[in-house]
Each structure stands twice: as structure tokens, then as C-alpha cells.
Image 1 (tube, rainbow, N blue to C red):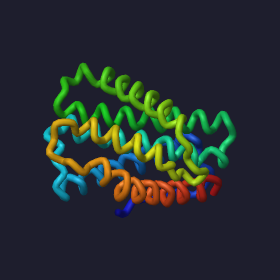
Image 2: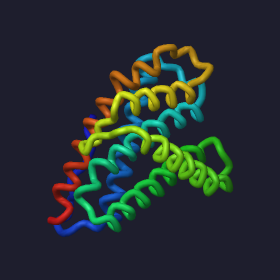
Image 3: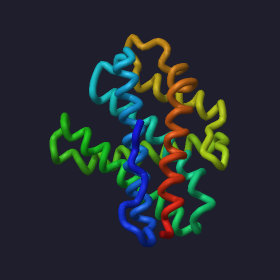
Image 4: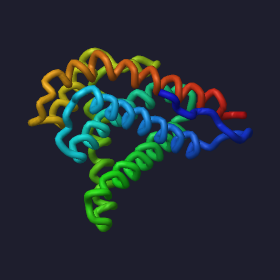
Length: 188
């Protein structure tokens, strides 16, 4: 998967620019992973469920992104980074939901996804993640179960194992690569 993660313009980057780029990277990785799963035969049954699975990948990667970026920022920058990244991801989720939902529901969809992210970040705080963003096995088990719940009623029996053993390691690797590129060039 090719993700643009290098700055086009030289100069110092603001925390907001870094966060918006991180949100783009997280969404792109999540969407292309779920699209690949669909091509591989996993049946999501509806766009809502597909977006629910994307939301689970986004949640896992936001937690991992926090672990990866924490040491490279001040506490205030880190809080701003997580806040802006989450808001951008919620906006993107609401935008994708707007295909099926009425426009007046956009704000509620964004708020609901922020609530989902807050819950998942709280859930993931109970598990260990390495400084490099690597989730522990219990974190991966939780993630696999969350994805399985999003796909409840589908005929995809092996989804939990697929996302834990195959997809999660790939998305974390891609996330680390993308974030290291934007963080390495943040002060140019």
C-alpha cells in the first residue's frame, strides 16, 4: 500500500498539520485494509458494518499512534495531536456515513464516532502497547472481538483470527512507517 507521508513544503510543521496528516494516514490504511478484506471474501452485509469495521481499525491505530508519538511531543502538543486527529477521523467517518444518512445527521454521526473513539481508547488503555505502537496479544484479542461484533450475522467465521494475525500487524507496520516519515520531517 502506498501512502503519501512526506511533506511537500519545507519548514516547521504545526501540531495541527501533523495531526491532520496522521488522521489521513490512519483512515487510508483502515479503508484499504477493509477493502482488501472485502475482496478476499469477507462479507460485511452493509456499508454501515463496513464502516464499523473501519472504525475499529481506526481506534486501534489511534491508540498505537499515541504510543508512537508520545515521546516526540510535549504533553500539550500530544493532547492537541490526539484531539485534532480524533476530530478529523470523526469528520471523515461522518462524511462517509452521509452517503446513507441525511445531512442533518452529520454532527450526530461525528459526535457518535468521537464517543466510540473515547470508549475504545479507554478500553485499550487497559492493555499494553509497546512504545513502538505494537499491541499486546490481549489488545489484539480485544480488537478481534470488536471487529467480530461489528460483523455479527455475517458468514465470515474467521474474521477475528484474520484481523489479529494478518491485518493488525500490517496496519501497525504501515502506521509506524507513515508516522515516522511525518515526524522525522516535522522540524524542517
